[in-house]
Image (cartoon, rainbow, N blue to C red):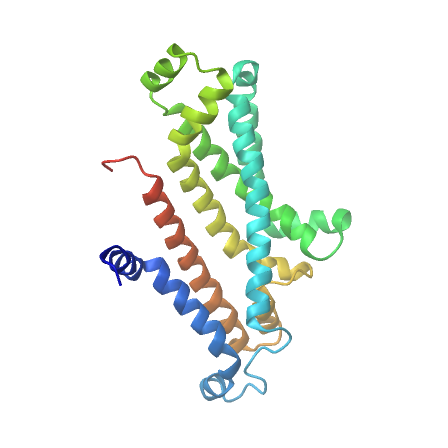
Length: 252
């Protein structure tokens, strides 16, 4: 093994995200064999292991809900931030901020209840609620990043003939990337937790064993779902921390 490869292996081994991701995979692999453990902890529970769907399937469905809603929210939030920091769009800044903030004042359960008559049961109302909750942190972070782009960098780019779109894509957005990643990190972590309630309207997620456990007075189901959700959230958070370090300006 070359010294470069050895350095890379050591760097990966020191990264908390790699250890947490490995631990999550091990937990998912061992969960189908954990019935004796939960049966010993909860001897009065007749069915100590959730079996309506595999935990791999639940985790993949949960991640799909979170990823899809977060990507949609990122497109909306970043797009709105760009719009309200350009020319005539600036006058809509307070209105856009107020609407995004109002979106987070609605409880997720209320959003689900309002969305079900329009979108039906399943993943659609859950996606609507998650998107609504994720827009604000991404919007605020992108606005902060665009406003904090150094004026000297903008002036220098304009001085050498950058067009407004070139200035945005080659100067402002790259400089704002650490802020955008921080906002996306907050939005995704919020959505990982909030996605569990999507199971109340028929969406498949890690909330399925939690809600069934609560309704059937089966604490084993609750622990199984909550344990994976918590580890997933911590793992994703550490992944974003690694990304933020990679995009951080030199010297930070």
